Length: 249
Image (cartoon, helix red, strand yellow):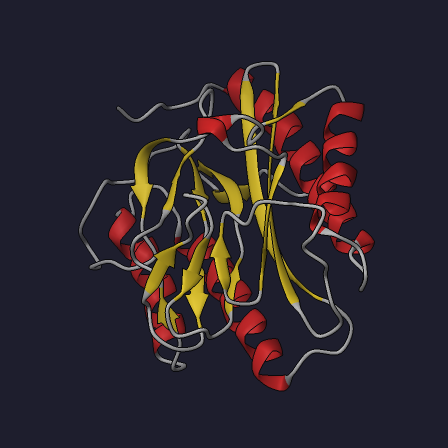
């Protein structure tokens, strides 16, 4: 069942989103070669807790950390640990959620570490641009299929592959709510957007092939091709004036 938020709910979601966005911004500034993903996770955890919120991901379904940190060919759900070292030339996807006053904010960016290849740089540019194109398309009265198709068309027309087994989702009192928000779809189909809906739009895009596999840890998803993958996400609110990004720092 889709939850439509009141003005009071949206005000609370703005607070949660701002904290999540701030944690993500700090993560991007903190990433450097030689640090472990566990060290980066602690920075994120301390920021969220220091702002009076709780990390949405910590213990969610048994996930053991405050952020999902995925490197290079890891698509999503990378588990931070003390042995995973970030290196120059890596691309690092950091997925962050924060919960305060009963509401969640969920956001992600893929960051370059030092100088990266032109191929990696282009992947990041296209994936991020597809996110903002989808946000621009998310208007009252539009079908979800239009938003989803925007991501697919933008990325596939540029030669990239859309991960189809995972998708965006509603956000609110629960981290994952209805509706599902795929990154592929048919224009004119799906749920019609109404004012007060809050959704996370999150393109997950591979350089080569949509194939993925889950590691033995039961969480981390890899590209089967071994190619790089990028992931960008914002939680947005649908309003009569258009989509509003709730996860800005």
